[in-house]
View 1 (cartoon, rainbow, N blue to C red):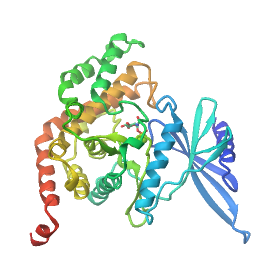
View 2 (view 1 turned 30 degrees about the vertical axis):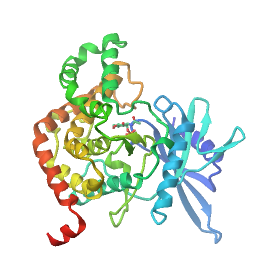
View 3 (view 1 turned 45 degrees about the horizontal axis):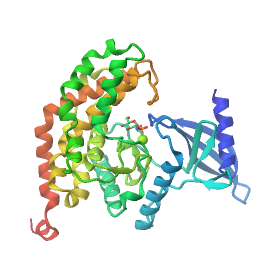
View 4 (view 1 turned 90 degrees about the vertical axis):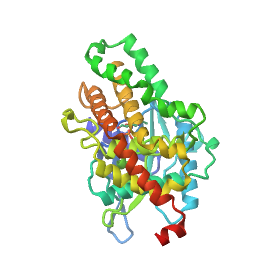
Length: 382
Ligand code: GN1
Ligand code: MG
């Protein structure tokens, strides 16, 4: 198996004309959708010494991303925009391969799609309670948002249609629960019951947007803190990665998804949910970082719905995991038979706890909004 992967990675590396000799690889298991490998090459530095170069080689999940052309075109436009605004900052660098008479940032290989970008030495965090790191992650996602504030959203393709349309996610769940193609519905009665009971609240962000009350921006849409790379020594955020879902979207979904992942006391797929819940200290640190960068550009409705967005995105993800369980685990990678069910249960436990803490979350948001919404001169005086 591992030899097959090595052979495939070697072949992909050749197609992308990566220089030097391939000597090792490891799988990076962070993502739940694409497969990612760090591959290492060695070249002669000209003085007879070895230089190593690493790349991230990704096999894109073509069930999730149906159109690689549009996907990579989005990513290239977004990275180009960020590079031109911040030429001094580290940026993602995608490699190109010749195929079908064209040079493209991806390679088709039967049903598989591959892409390659230069590895950036960095650290990432899945779980972290250090308020400085969490605050920096909030700043990084806030900066990302601001960097794209003048990007014309109409230039972007919808890489996954209706990605954060919570109503549609619910419609899919209800349909699949009725059809019950794998006979799993009987196992998920309690989870379905909870999600259906909170459906209207969970869909509030989507409804407000559909009613024209929340603006579309260019958003990241997958703001897990492990998508922020930090400098290994200084701990400074270097770059936001995983641009597959950069699309027109709601800022609340970026804020809420980051909180959902970072501020959970447990991993997002904890089988024991007795400790699952929202850590208000982590929430505070993230909110402080994010709002320090974004408050001034947010509308009143956006600010008023930030806390609620944590609840709605958590329910939305629970519907997605549960739905995938019902249809036989087609979308998310799983590492046990009931992985998607476990994930859904964990998100539901988190959603319940967020409901209990909404008042405290709103108070924290309010205090940050007051602090960062002041005009510069007023801040100096206070
Ligand atoms: C997926 O693959 P990863 O971990 O970056 C998913 C997100 C979910 C997340 C849950 C394109 O992200 O929407 O929130 O899993 N990405 C896609 O862990 O569906
Ligand atoms: Mg992702």
